[in-house]
Length: 71
Picture 1 (spheres, rainbow, N blue to C red):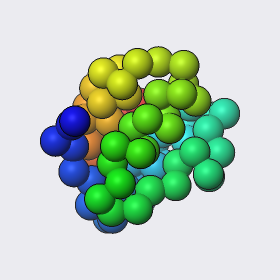
Picture 2 (picture 1 turned 90 degrees about the vertical axis):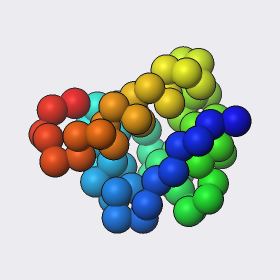
Picture 3 (picture 1 turned 135 degrees about the vertical axis):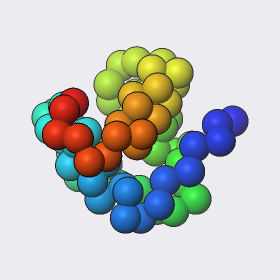
Picture 4 (picture 1 turned 45 degrees about the horizontal axis):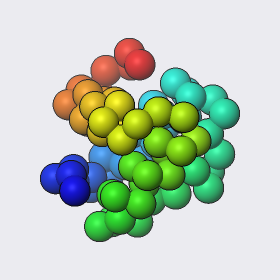
């Protein structure tokens, strides 16, 4: 289990960044409800064909610098 917590406000920015970085992700792939971080990570890992650690690292990295335009 991860300790990842995403606020609704942060998710709006993060969702845009992820959709730009991985343009094949759909709105359904990026669907997130507060408290459902594990479901989100599992879904993204399947769609990106990566492991959970990669997804957690990517999300954590983007969360640490939400104001940046870099991907």
